[in-house]
Image 1 (cartoon, one colour):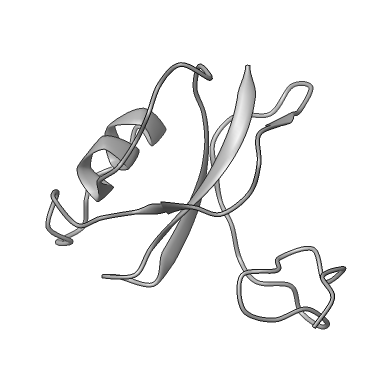
Image 2 (cartoon, rainbow, N blue to C red):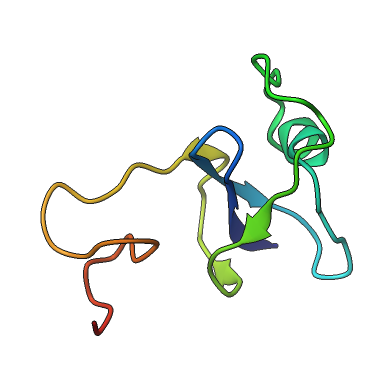
Length: 83
């Protein structure tokens, strides 16, 4: 199952979740449900944006994504994006 990264501008958080390619997530509430997390005060109808194309990861689960310690910027979490 592919892993997708989404970002919520309302709270500044990015989350990675696995879901079917046929599923579409568009709100923080839908993302939290897919990730099995509480919304932590962010309105459930807050819009989210898909950050990366789907990737297939062996094992894994759900995780919160943090920006890299060095390199990269903006939404480039790998540090390998061209500026």
